[in-house]
Image (cartoon, rainbow, N blue to C red; front, side):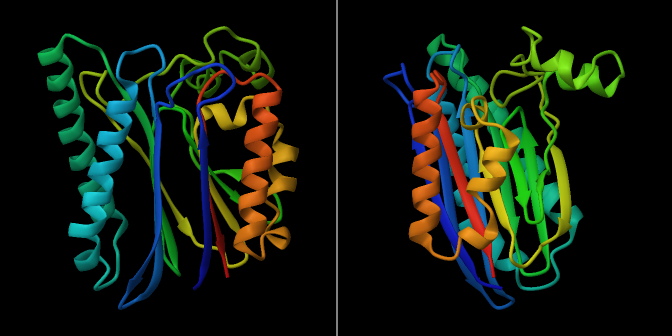
Length: 255
């Protein structure tokens, strides 16, 4: 399988410091090309959120360089990815907490990470970054780890009520600011001719699902330049609509 990849990030309409961090790369392996992508949203209400997000992206890129080559040498089991990524998150959660204690600051980050192979995708999520699959429609792969999503799952709130609830941005956990972290994992079959999108919450607040689907429709993403133009247009649209949070997005088109 082949891929087109693109990414973009912006501090938003009001902030001077962008606390998001991201990384995406196509990797050649003995089992064909793969894509690894990770996006982290440092906590805007906590000091040094950008340090937490950058540290976690660095940890995942180190994993990609050190461990993925051996993992990709054979069939990649869901359980093997889960085990290694859970250990990575647990280790970084402790390291970021220790850094904060030593320096008298609070810091943390959400994260969505994705490995795409020709047969299967592997997704980790902590917090409210999202991963979407865009083919015939727009499908949200991840599930937000927020108070309102928990209330919806428990049947105590409707989606419409959640959209207007003042707690909609309150996280249940994040890396570096939680005593322990339990990532969610999602696995599935990679679709040829689809777009996989990872984004921070600031990228989607001011956009409708229809706008996301239309902008990243696979039939429109035949070239890297077209994908980059769509990313930049939607980042600009978010800012014009007053998005105050950091705005970050990664897109991967499969062929």
